[in-house]
Structures are given as C-alpha cells and as structure tokens.
Image (cartoon, rainbow, N blue to C red):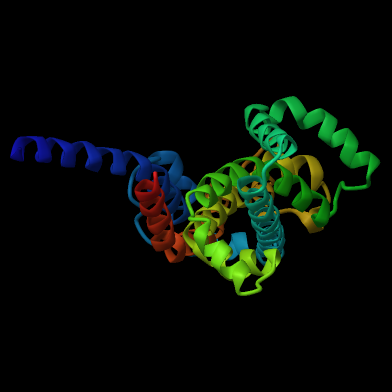
Amino acid sequence: MRKTHALVFIVVLLLALFFLLPFYVAILMALKTSQESFLSFYGLPHGLHLDNFISAWKTSHYIRGLSNSLIVTIGSVLLIIAVSGLAGYAIARKRGWYYQLVFLLFLAGIMVPFQVTMLPLYKLGKTLHMINTQWGIILLYGGFGLQTAVFLYVGFIRAISREIEEAAKIDGCSTPGIFFRIIFPLLKPLTATVAVINAIYIWNDFLLPLLFLQKEKFRTIPLQQYFFFGQYSSQLNLAFAYAVMGMIPIVIFFLLMQKFIVKGISAGAIKG
C-alpha cells in the first residue's frame, strides 16, 4: 500500500508541475529583459525587471481592459445563473412533454461546436447592431453558457426532496417564493461551481471578443494582449507581464470560491 501511495503521489506531483509550467514561464518572461529572453528562454533572470509591468500598464490601458473584462464576465455569469437556475427548476419540477423537449434542446446545444455557429452569429450580431457593444457579447456568452448550466441545475434540483416544497406550499408560500427562499439557497455550491467555470472561460476567451469587440475602447484583457504582437515586431516580455496582471483577478476569484466548488462536488457525489 505504501508503494502504491508513493507512486500516486509522484504521478500527481508530476502532473501538478506539468500544469504549473505555463505559469512559471509567464512569470519568468515577465521579469526578464528581451535580451535575457533571447539568450535563455527558460533561464532565471539576473534581476527582477518590474519595468515590464509598468510599461505594460501604460501602453495597454490596463484599467480599461480590466473594467471591460469585469463588465463582460460579471454580466454574463449573472445572466447564466439567473436564466439557467429558473429554467432548471421549471424543467426539474414541471411535468409535460414540452418541458422535456426544451431540456433536450438545451442538451443538443452542448453538442454544437462554436465554430459551426460562428459565421451565422456574426451576421446576426451585425444585423442586430450587437457588434462593439458589451450587452451584445454578454447575451452571446449567456447563450453559450446556458446549456451546461441548465443540465447541472436540473440534475441537482431533481435530487432535492419535494417534501420541502410541499411543506412550504401548505404554509402558503408561492412558487417564486419557494424557488428564491428555499431551493436557490440549497443550490449555492452548484451556483458557485457554475460561476467559476463560466467566469474562467469568459475571462480568458479570445475568439468571441475578437469578432464582436473590434473597437479599442471595448477590448478585454486577452484581446488587448494580442496587440502586443505586430506584423514586424513583438513585445514578448510586455505581453507576458500583461498576461500575469490579467491572471491575478481570476486567480483570486477562483481561490475565494474553491471551497464552494469542493462542497458542490461532494454534495453531487453524495446525492448521486
């Protein structure tokens, strides 16, 4: 047993090091000069060159990119949670073939890759004047995040006993009151999981902002980082410094929410 535990520990440690390698490279490159990067890509810097962060902050309008990313991410996540929570509750509790049909349509949406819908979405967005608008990309992210979120909410709500709701109805509680006062608080671990998964995806996404946020004042952090690379030159160290600054908010959010994710996974395992 000790040999097995030691082998598992070594495998997990190697996997952890493998996944942490990009973070190591990003921080390393952000603290090096361009000459040091050219001489040794993985070598340690001779000193901490914090000038890269200062230059990246000034040249890239970091505050504007951060505010754009926050608005798009927070708005999209709130939209996903609100709509998928209500839809999941209706599908899980109501009986009727049309509810099951809607649920199947949500599941079908999971199987359709974004590349298939990219051009039709762009044409639709241009027709509806959604290009270069934050509300437009929030609606798009909300639509893409709904499928998986509804699937998770339906499975979680079906595992909650109906006796709680029946007791609330006897006490005179309405259906909206049952959801917001009883059911939704029980969904806190799952809601945190949905929020973290979608927040990380939206915060780091590049392709959708590239298509729909073409004006400079609407660029998010990943899109702004792209413009450190020109046709004839690239500011590699500044780009990595900007990437490190862009990772800080989402890493802090993940660390604050990880305990709820663990609770959600544990609760799902027990109820399953």
